Length: 153
Image (cartoon, rainbow, N blue to C red):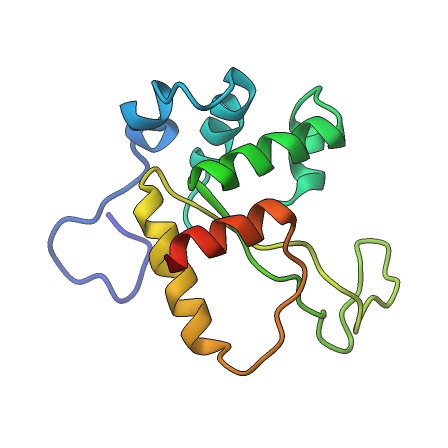
C-alpha cells in the first residue's frame, strides 16, 4: 500500500534490487583507447542516477586516486567522447557552503555529461553551440577544445 495520497489504484514501483546495479556498454569496457583507470572512472560516473551532482571533490572522497589522476582520467574520457565537460557557472547570490560561508558569485564546479554513446556528446556540443551563439565560451581544457573542433567537422 502506498503512503502517497495521490495513489488511488494500480501498481506502484518500489525499491528494487536492480536499482543497485550499473549496466555498462561493452563499447566502453572493451575500448582499447581507454586506460583501465578511465574505464573504472567511467563505471563510477555511470553508477549514479541522472541529475546526481558529481564533482572532482566527490570523486576524490570516493577513492584513493589523486586529483591529478582523476583529472587525467576525465580528460581521457573527454577525448574519447564519453564525457563532456561544460562551462563553470557563477553560483547565485546568497549561496552558502556547508560551513555557512557565502560563496555567491563564485565559480561553481564543472558540470559533466556522461554517456556510453560518444555521438551523444557531439549532439550536446551542437546544441550548446546554438544556445551560446555570439557568446564567448571559456573554461574548456585543450582536450575539450579539440573535442569541440572534432564534433564540428
